[in-house]
Image 1 (cartoon, rainbow, N blue to C red):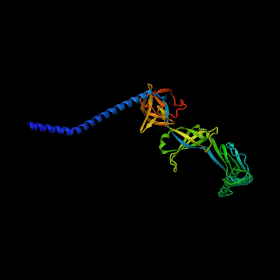
Image 2 (cartoon, rainbow, N blue to C red; image 1 turned 120 degrees about the horizontal axis):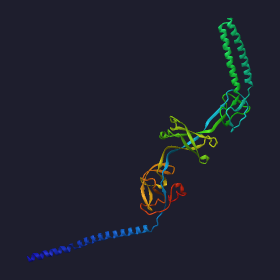
Image 3 (tube, helix red, strand yellow; image 1 turned 180 degrees about the vertical axis):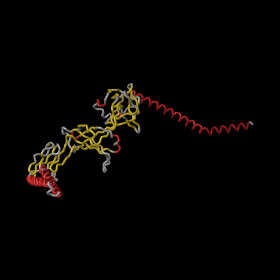
Image 4 (tube, helix red, strand yellow; image 1 turned 90 degrees about the horizontal axis):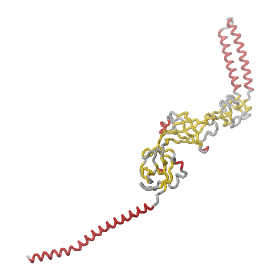
Length: 386
């Protein structure tokens, strides 16, 4: 027994001695991992404290806020248009002859019934005299035949032939009178002489042009409406027209026509607006922009579009509350110029940060330099900070 115990102890000691390096290595690895975790935790703690210290030391950024009020937002189309005259009439001759007088010139304002040109009328006066003579003879013949017919001295056929000649000469006389009147060419409407083809001494034939008259006391603005928007403007009554050639001056046009079918080539519907032009500022051929309001939203919430921050699929703003900036997610609606409707996320009375908001964080302290009621109050609201 003593020998067995001694052998066992020797084996145990040998095993422990042989395993000692492995055990030491395992213990060292465990200690290294433990101390590594402790060092990392301490490093994170120190960095966190440094960041908090820096954040505390930084001054609160200056911002400008907008006090949201109820406004009216318009969902509108802005389309190009072309100005055309209310009436564009080309006056033409109805008889042939030589022009002996043209008392108007290009650019003149003429009144309906005013003489534009006169033709040599001598041939037409001679023809009228001939037709008057023929009619006089036919009338005398018919009167005589009428008396003879009552006495049964001539047949009914002879009387009918005499009546036919009388009617024929009467028609020829009326035609001669009409042709003589047509040697004086008059303005069929009031307007401006845009082009004058009549020249003294010029020989004209029917239907040569004499003058082009434009009525521009009122003008028409023509716009092409896409099919997708035709339903929205069915009940449109008026629209605002802006003419850049006149320094961006605006006019109001009244709807007078909306086509029932689109133009075959462009596939747009033709809309015509009437605009008063008594001052003569608008000229045919000018281009313009027409704002067609499809829908108005009263008492809407709106903010400047530049106040909205977009990140990925998210749209949000910062609210100024208790001298801190607070994150607020928003849903956008109609864009009206540089203002955008907010359909969800804001309400009347909220203060939205509109200047200095790009680098803010949720909960960050801020210095509100100014609160405005209207973004137009800011002279530099679109500065570099935006």
